[in-house]
Image (tube, rainbow, N blue to C red; front, side, top):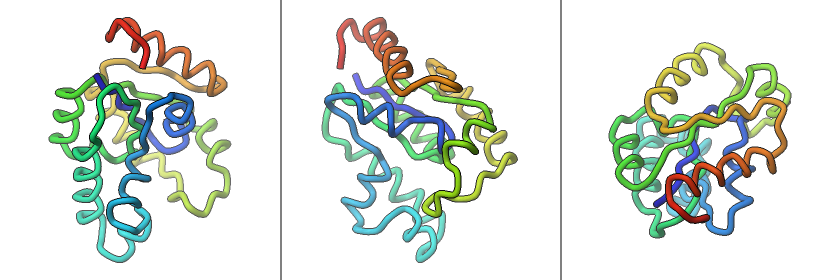
Length: 159
C-alpha cells in the first residue's frame, strides 16, 4: 500500500514525506525522467504537457509501501485520483492561507499564491482524500506522527 500526500503548495507534503525511509516526490521524479524542472516544462511546453509528465511520473513509481509527495495539481486529472486510490490511500495535508504564505515566503521557485486556485483545489482535495490532516502550527514531526497513525490503522504496519 502506498500513501499519497496531496494538498496545495506549502502545506508540508515534501517535508513530511522525506521523513519516511521510503519516499518519493513527483516533482523530483519529473526532473529525473524528463531532465527538466516542472517550472521549465510549464514555461517551455505548457501546462497540458506538464500534466502529462506528472501523470506519467505518478504511474511510474516502481515500489510499494512508499510515501509519495504529489504536486499540488496532480488531482486536476480524475484518472490520477483513481490511480492513487487503486494503489493506496490519499491523505490531504492542508493548512491556513496565512501559514502557507509564511512558509513559501518569497521563494522564487514557487508560483505566486493564488487564493482562487487554492479554494478551487480544496474542493477537489476534499473529494479525493481518504484522510485529512491540518498542518497549521504543527512541526514536521507532529505531521509525520499523524501520517504514521493512519498508515498503521490502514495497513497494519509502518512504512
